[in-house]
Image (cartoon, rainbow, N blue to C red; front, side):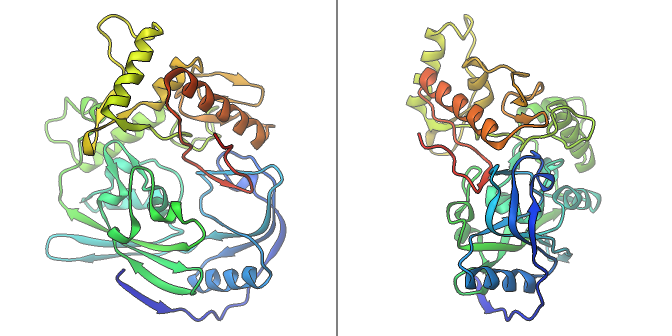
Length: 368
């Protein structure tokens, strides 16, 4: 832990009641917030927490709403929407430290780093949401994750109302996971500082990305960004009003990471069920510690849930089986029911329990 300072609140709150939450999420699902406040500065966040605590109300933090499943009944406490803005670039000997407020739009930030020829975030282009959510999920794509470049995370500790600067080791980052995700009621992320490399080479560790750039001798950061955006559009993973698959949280489940022996058993089950052609192999990638990452999308499709599956107003994206989507006029309960059916069927067929990626507000993910 780097530092801790007190933060005295001194702002007047503008609390709104009975605010619809569905329009504030990319799924466009869910009910209303009993109370709601827009926080455009850190002082408002502190004051809002105190207001809710004094009334013993539960608190939910909202950013861009791109990774939330909100209950149909809404949220019975105070929703704090983080809208803080600000970016600061500080050049060092070999790196540039970029500090961004939690409410900054993520892809706008990535675009600026690429325009400034700063390497480190280029493969994370096109991801919706705001900066404050990135360390919580340890957002990653195409061979990069934010933990690769995070220098520190500025947080408000809810219990003590102190501002702290957490070093990466304090954040306990893991695959699509962090201390913030495991302790959701302890911290509110206020800002993130990234260490970026001026003139650095782009990361080309992900096979799909490197293959897409195979004809480019020395891809620039801008070329990598354009290619990532194109790949994401093909999978309906870039928000676009004219995309029928747009109402989603992106990947609903994380890719399972298993010990090598267990991954081998999954492959054996798939082969025994006739799901692998002669000579074909199940998609798998080695990760640290001798473990193996499997494709959740592949498992979902082989469990019988194909792209474009529809269950009334909810279903699977036509572009990517890992994205559950809302067609309009649906309910969060219907979406969660489909997700639970997918989880249970994949587990029955392959012995793998898929873990959801989004945060649930006002409802809990069904127990195993």
